[in-house]
Length: 96
Image 1 (cartoon, rainbow, N blue to C red):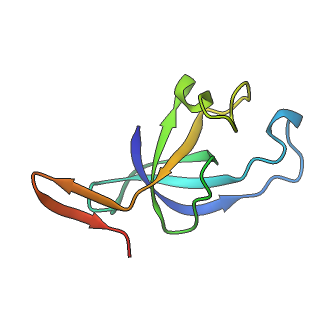
Image 2: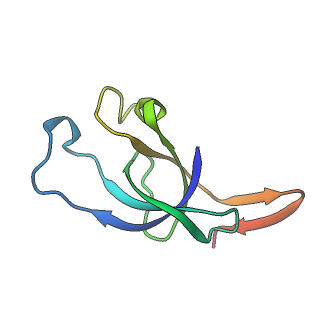
């Protein structure tokens, strides 16, 4: 899984029927402080994430292991909304 920050939404008026109903969010990989620092990916949202939230997402075959995305053609899925990141006993990120 990868830490990321939701930086946008994706709306597609025409799409493959098997992804109908999926909320698609634009996520940029981030560091443990929640600062965007990596690549951008479009993720199916399995947990109700919103703009600006730090999330955990999985890609590849792991992205299809949720009830919402099973047997659907997705390559990245948000699987958790992060409340806190602690590294070496130090809180590096805390959701506001």
